[in-house]
Amino acid sequence: MEDRLIVSIIQCFFIAFGVIIGGTIIGSIGSFLTGEAPLTSMYRIAKGLRIWAIVAAIGGTFDAISNFEKGILDGSTFDVFKQIVIIISAMGGVKAALLLFQWILGDEVT
Image (tube, rainbow, N blue to C red):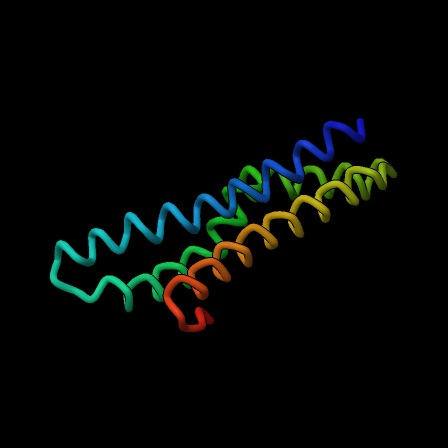
């Protein structure tokens, strides 16, 4: 069971990372095509995608709520712990992607 948890943690990290990176790059291409400044729009897009990257990484909010409910009502604390760790992993992927853009673009994405 622990091996599966580690796999889920790594996958959630990189899914959230990929949503931020891919969405920001593709979105900035769209901004370029419409005549907006792509670097400025990268900050706006990355900022707006943060919560969606976490939701995409954990597989949707209803699954997470269902696992929390099962963990609390059925007394399975491992399920609650697993969901918390997966959410933290997804948040780490988002933060890593934002740091990458900060290093590339030379400005802080807040």
